[in-house]
Length: 138
Image (tube, rainbow, N blue to C red; front, side, top):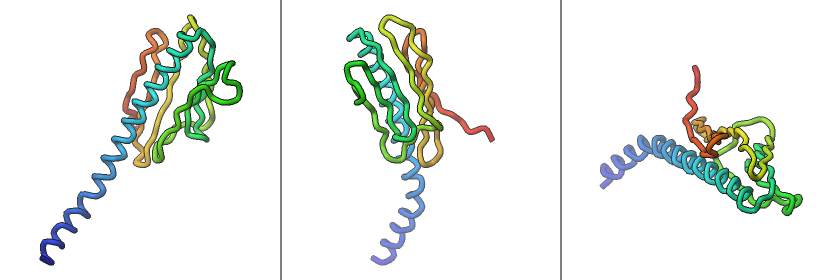
């Protein structure tokens, strides 16, 4: 019985780092999809309600928020990123979106605790978000 427990412990200690890296990757992919969906729903909201809005990407609060004239100081909607996923930027960025107008060229990079990165870009012509892996240049 002691030998079986020792073998299970050895297998668990070898597989634990790859398991945590896999979970971090899944969390990053899921967050990237959430951000892409948030951008799409925000642009749909602007067009549907015919109200301009400001999309604010705030790396300090680790969130993306949409502000409209009707919402005042509180965001009309916001997406707070989960623990372990951060916005890879130094300062807040604001994009103004007008109904019937051209969409801004929004680009955002997310990073997880393993330093893996995903870039979410919004195509200004089609307003379709694209998610790309960002490779480190070493």
